[in-house]
Image 1: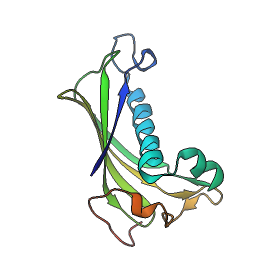
Image 2: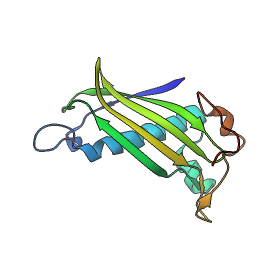
Image 3: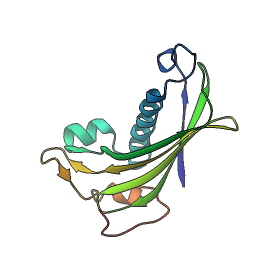
Image 4: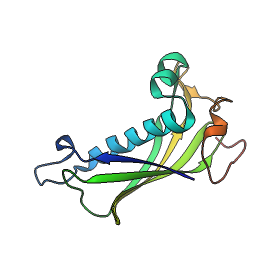
Length: 140
């Protein structure tokens, strides 16, 4: 099961060549992750960080850029959770514009206790809401 959010390429995303500057894709990717947690998990980043003192830093990230995106393009970011561990998740995010793949990223996020700075198990109320194709019990 995948989560999809549409984001429009804004002026702030493009470089002098008129295409999305690659670090901006990572900002758009992070916005997709934030929307996923808010809409699908039911716990937004403000609640997670400020009230629960939990974060989900990215600990591994690889990306492939297939075609340029330009100002005004509407990009559909499709997030698919590939694996869920005790305190981590692997995901794939594909950015599409109509039928054109623009970017694909594979990332690992870790649930972290912001007070201790160490990994923490997914909270019982969040874990069942994480869409996944496979559940690996006891994995990091």
